Image 1 (tube, rainbow, N blue to C red):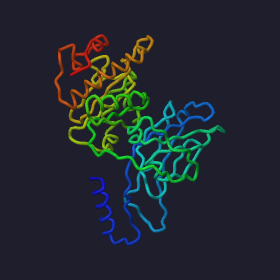
Image 2: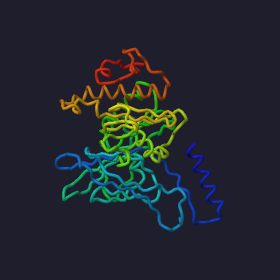
Image 3: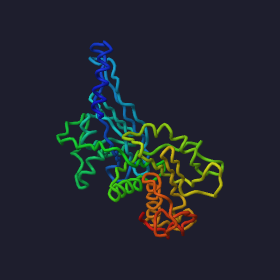
Image 4: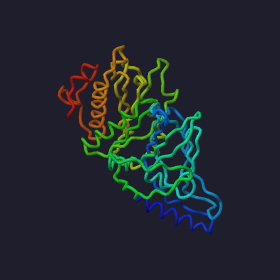
Length: 334
């Protein structure tokens, strides 16, 4: 379908009569994880700014009707970020902190390494296509690529064109490793196409004066990011994940573990009170992850499958869940 659209755009461009001065790029997008670490210690280079700029000159191509949009973001505290990058045939500039690179599309398609500097320290930059990583978790990145990069000789991995069933959209600050774990877990367990986006921003408008994040405001502020999601069907659901304490606009309860918006196929799930740390106790990651798993699986059951809430405590759909005792006692199956 994507290729048919690209060909159609090309035909439209040519029909404008702009001979030699218009083009439609036939690039594809690749979900790519960028990891940056300091070479001397192996520690992550946290929070560095990342910028990807796509460009072309006017020699032969005056206007590209489908030039990819530039991307600007930051690495998280683990020195990682997940981006949708285009294998653009013209120019691709990648800036990582103080280091700048002019890269070829092959590194977007097949992955590779770059080396740069940050504060007079050498950094290693790895680009890992998610499709390639999922094909073989034991595969190693390409040999070290320096500027200008050499051509990568590995064949391009197949990209699934299956529609997305569940989009996981972590808000800024949500642990990326938790998102990836949920993505893999539910893809395997439920046989669904579960995908994760990069972190969405948290805006001041999302919060109440008490400091709680308000579900209805999250819904409203995410309208544009939600419109940019691809491979959407009428059945696709989106699960926004936040570390912030959650409540509704009317404040009818002190808090909410999750809130659902069926018309938008959107749910907001909070991990704040799923951790014992919220209550001044020591966090036990395995317990926190199990609670998060139950809340997201319940959300998928309600929103994607259309299951009804249950009074059976052995079901993950048990309701109402008023506290952690209820959640811990609930089962894990539908």
